[in-house]
Amino acid sequence: MQLVQGGSPRAFELLYDRHGGAAFSLAYRMVGNRVTAEDITQEAFLSIWRSRLRYDQARGSVRTWVLGIVHNRAIDQLRRGMVHDRRRETLDGVEERFEARERTDVEAARREDARGVHDALGTLPEEQRRTIELAYFGGFSHSQIAEMLEMPIGTVKGRMRLGLEKMRKQLTDVVIPGELA
Amino acid sequence: MTGPDHARFADDAGAYLLGALEETERVAFELHMESCPDCRDEVERLRPAAEALPRAVEQVSPPERLRASIMDAVRDEGDAAPEPRRERRRLRLPSLGFRPALAGAMLVVGLLVGFGVSQLAGGGDDVRTISAKVDDARLPTASAQLRVEGDGDDGAALTAEGLPDPGAGRVYQAWIATGDKIAPAPTFVADRDGSGSVALPEDLSGADAVLVTRERRGGARVPGEMPVMRVDL
Image (cartoon, rainbow over all chains, first blue to last red; front, side):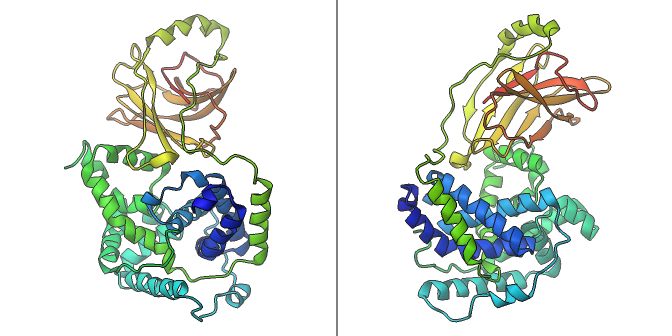
């Protein structure tokens, strides 16, 4: 990351290689459209390049920083365009999914971590998992969720907080090699 | 230990971390966290769970053209200076393009008091919170802060406390001053407890100041009075 902050395009290319897939996957998961996901990922990475001096390792890993920027861009896109009636693409998405082979220790650790997070999310009570997914991946505000689920805003907020609390307790730390690089 | 008005924000930590608060709510919660250790602790305790969520997403390969497109743009910008860590721009007083009838009232500038700049706790380099100058002759109990992220190209949000009722059929209205031009921004009202907030979605990166006046409900195209608040950018 120091080389990126020093202005090395080659180092930035490596940063993209390391985190671009996760960034695109998150954007695609949120907007459900490959073209829009590409736009979001491109905007996010250009923003990261331009603001590279603002990264502070003390505030989290590079991956967390990158995915946070992608998430914010995707929420902006969702709320600006309200493309919540998104259509899921299928064929090309399936064809391009990563193969399941574990090419490196990093990928193996990430897969294990992903399973852990997925399991933690899956063990939440349905109503907590749903509010979290609608908020984080759907980009809906708490008031929109309250309207959709026909429940008080306070209940929605409470379920988000309780769900995150339960997830936190279930998650075990998985050290991803090179995550802070 | 809780901060003032904690009950109002007690359940907001989860929604905040998930990005589910409205912009003005998010700003209000972040301001509250500055004085509420309990909320800060809860956010930090829950943060790992929220930050884990994107790791559960099924991985999909981006097209190769995306990599090429990003790197082409990066190389094109290669020699351009990156956005620096946040530094305060030199304070300046723009000449204001108010209606001539109001020009004499510029003396009100002498009544403006209380300017300060602070960084949000945990906000890091990307966030500035700038205190507003308030005309304490007209708004004796009011205070306000503008929260700006980055260069302000994604806008900002203004939150105010201690606002009096602006009068029947009237609202508060924000304005963006850039050089001699003053552009209308959204209106907002004060709650019963005198708090109000407004999101300013416009690009503020080239703006000189954010102003607030009291206008008729629905807003005005040009300011009808000298500003009751002003935030120099």
